[in-house]
Length: 142
Image 1: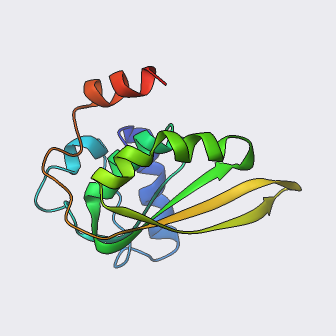
Image 2: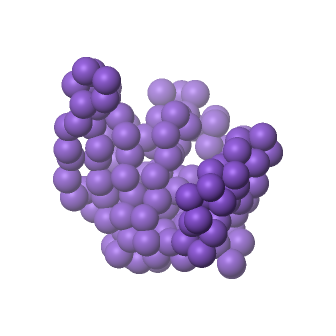
């Protein structure tokens, strides 16, 4: 899912090049809108996002798309993870997320990378995801 058409076009080409058409669907759209649509809401086993924003913001965008028992995986750095987890505790509870595990990994010699995993334990309230304007307003206060 990406709101930028150029990125989606590239991803469509990559999917075709690797013969993944039966397993991967690239969608040009906004996650906060898709999370309210029946054809996408609570349909996916795993969701992740990279370079979208804070953990709190990313949770709200991704989790409504996940099935109950699905997994949300966030890539973060060690330097801010404790703060971001603390900031996102209330929304994690509202989204019915249970923390599962963290795993450090290295990319190009950089060891500050971390994958943090949560599991969705219940149906997401219809109030999530909120509009982009509402989500941004909450994230600016941090």
